Amino acid sequence: MTVFQVWAPGRDRVRIQVDGSARELRRTDGGWWRVELAAGPGTDYAYLLDDDDTPLPDPRSLWQPNGVHAASRVYRPESFAWTDQAWTGRGAARRRAL
Image (cartoon, rainbow, N blue to C red; front, side, top):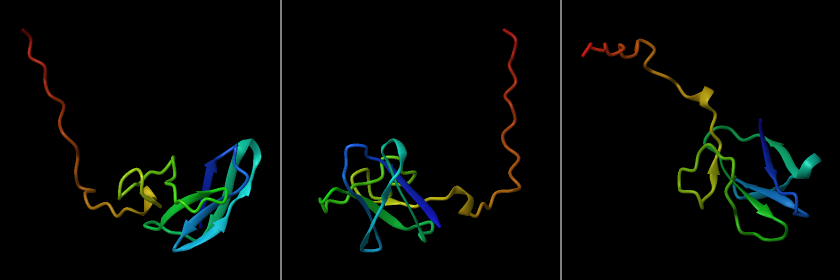
C-alpha cells in the first residue's frame, strides 16, 4: 500500500489519477488530503483539484521521469536492488605539507 498526501488547504475536492481512474482523497487536519491505495513502485499518478480534470504532478514527488509538468511516479528506495555490495569506497587523499 502507498499513502498519497498533498497539502491543498484552499480546495474543496482533491482526487488522484492512478491507472486511468480517479479516486477521492479525504480531507485531514491542516489542509492535508490523504488516501491509501495499492500502488507499488513504478506506478504513475497525478492529482486533480476541485472539478478540474487537468492532471498535476505531486509537488513532493521523489521521481518525475517525464519532467516536472508530467505525472509523478511512486518511488521506494528500499525496493532498488543494489549490486555493488563489495565496493569499499575511495581512499582519503593525503595532504602534502608545503
